[in-house]
Length: 329
Image 1 (spheres, helix red, strand yellow):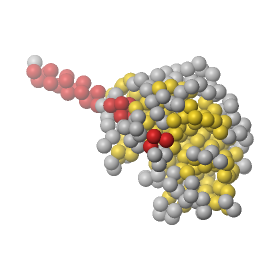
Image 2 (image 1 turned 45 degrees about the horizontal axis):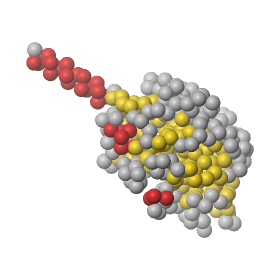
Image 3 (image 1 turned 90 degrees about the horizontal axis):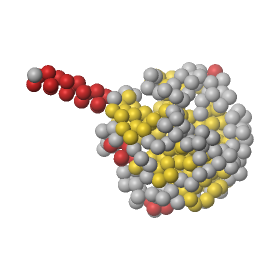
Image 4 (image 1 turned 120 degrees about the vertical axis):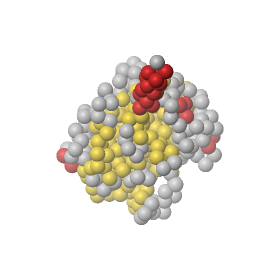
């Protein structure tokens, strides 16, 4: 009997480790916007001044909140037709420009806007030949100090489903030079792309095939992961670096969103977290000890009324991991 009990306990424990599920409540919910979509987090020199940007498709602007436990509303900026994706670049020098930047895709304007943060001054545009740009991610390749933006257009076909731009400065303005496109393995109509800068891998959410496809930054397909895990459309993706490894977290756009967690190196599924967010599009992560989020801040867009998106929810990143027995060292 003791041996049988041990075997049963061991089996159950192993199942919990491999397929752990958890739930977590948001710390705070932002004031509502008009069809909001994707968040991004800017870390200020004084951490208490850090900000969360949230694209507001119906308002043609970007909402700005403090990264605090009240989600204090700060302002709106921009004048766009339908802002969708947003990515922030910090600590990079582009030509003579040494400012933090927010890159925002304007789906119906067929353009990408570049604003300074936190001044919110428009300092460039590019991608005027991209049909309905949706997701965007930006990184600096340390080996050559070059900056690249990867954009997924809603209307991308064949090898034009992911477009790489080299970001430059010309006459004090930011421009993007198209130099590579790829993604034949993806189904059409994608919205989400994320860079794992350290590993130089591009992660693209394949909504229709319900998996995530992995490419090198030079457009070479590597693998897929998540098949059989996602039940609805794959949307937001974030990368968490923990020592030499870490996690990839992606939103499963169910009526009540589930956040699927994968090993950053092996892509093995590690757990599922359910929060309060509903039908989530974009997510964002700051792995920085903020005054009111010492274990980091995780932000998820939420669409509780099924009208396209009303607000964002702030979660304690440490608690999110803890809910499935994980931690970030």
